[in-house]
Length: 161
Image 1 (spheres, rainbow, N blue to C red):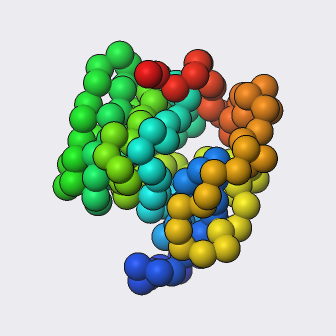
Image 2 (cartoon, rainbow, N blue to C red; image 1 turned 90 degrees about the vertical axis):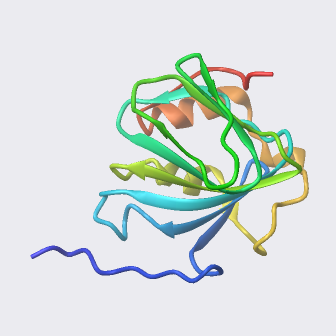
């Protein structure tokens, strides 16, 4: 019998983290799912972007709830808007950027584990809003690379323009 318990989260429920300019509301964590997956609702403002990176341990799925993103996977550009899903298999370089004034999307990682990186490098959100810009929330790029590698990821370069 599994130790995993059913999970339900209302729109306001979950573990809220401010992470490098984003609000991430974790609806399910790896700990809650016996490391099967994690699911977060991310909200970010225009221009927010991830560095080009890849995951060696998990796949990622993005589902846009509101707004527009650009997601480049293995040199192929995808431009999902509300209601569109994009799958990024493990091992493929990818990055994403918010193209609309704000965007809100679900990101699913499977199997679980990488959510620990957000918890380790973010801070508890004081409210369910995208945080105000604070340069102190952005660590040294070398620190980001090292912390991602500890979770089986590889940063390959800065965000794409």
